[in-house]
Image 1 (tube, helix red, strand yellow):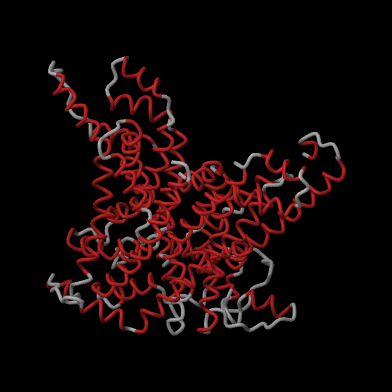
Image 2 (spheres, helix red, strand yellow):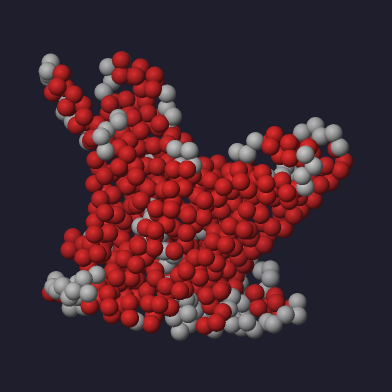
Length: 317
Length: 280
């Protein structure tokens, strides 16, 4: 795997023949070589992250139609896209769904992930094996997990309803087909997907807490719960912040899971800002409207980015 | 196994530990149930839309043979695109990580900051702008175009991860190479890269997983069936074959195989990547 890296690095190498005695020139040449290491990545990130950010802002003021792809014409239309999108009731719904989906997913993932992290901090046989197998749901492509769950949650023939019916509970819950249930179901599936990530990071954080602290607490007669609340949680705080913010970042933009489970339906009950961007741009082919929703999504992410960087700074460095 | 550590209250402690193992197995059973169900459904293709037995009565592999004939090409596409994305990702990010870790260039802090920020840009926003440029550049429906887009998923992550590693390479090692007359490129290739083997493997692994799992770029940057990775293949499969869950699930199982293999072969790198790439 190092071969492509090596050849690419070698190709960026500046020709270094005929060593000039002039120290200033030498220094300049060394700087140039050094920038040769960093420049490809900078260019790549500018093209694949910087440019789309700027382009989206511009696009949100342009009028796109399917015709645009033949004529190449996308005339500017002021704030027409913005007012059209923001006044559409679907936007408000999608915003609300995004917030509920994100908050619900984070809460569930975090609580279960933390409980499992604490559980696996004990010593017992097979601990390591079980801990790594639990990662599997996180590694499977999200769209595939969504499709598997779509089968499990099927109202008539899905195994979840079969099971619930067998133990005497209501066995015909319309998990994905009723507007009232669908968002909750999508959240539950996303909680399942997020558990491993939360668990692994929180487990790592728990390992860094010095054992003596717990011993001291138990010598002072603290109960397990008390020790957890007064020692573990405060010590874990920086890690908790990182988990929650990273969880937020990845959850707020989820698209594949929702498309695989419900395609945003039924009756737009699981439409979020992410799926709405997709719908506007790639289904309606109105890239201007898609850009508007995308920009709102970025604004929300940016607010949390600030939060994240703050949290990282108080983290020590 | 039980005599793992010399415990004073051996019998009770041992009992409690075994209890924990049982509880752990139960937790694992619940968490992995959907994956079991995927496999189980894949092995009972005839049930179609009907309910599925909890355990496959006999191994029916017709779902798998259908999945392979329908989706085998897409699996291959995923493999090609993912390996290409890994190559691009490592070629771009390993030198950058070293440069940012060592050279003290003027913009280093800004670049590192920018790298962190890129991880927060929603993919669909990128796709929105990228699609239009891809149309202009003729990169829509091309393997290379998808590789580039997929590489963007791994590059910021890899830079952060490898930089954190390369900062901790002792300066004397690098200086010794330089005293021996090696230039920066030679030092990087001969000394730094071999020493960073673990960080490279972890980054490459994650770049592969990101690319293999990618659905959004596959969905948005392709308008024909020329370049169709398995994620997109399965998604379109359920649209067309809702009645044939056996084949859909068999294709799903096949798409999950790389993750399972990597987990078994490289679990320590995966755990290191999840924590290292995020807590930085």
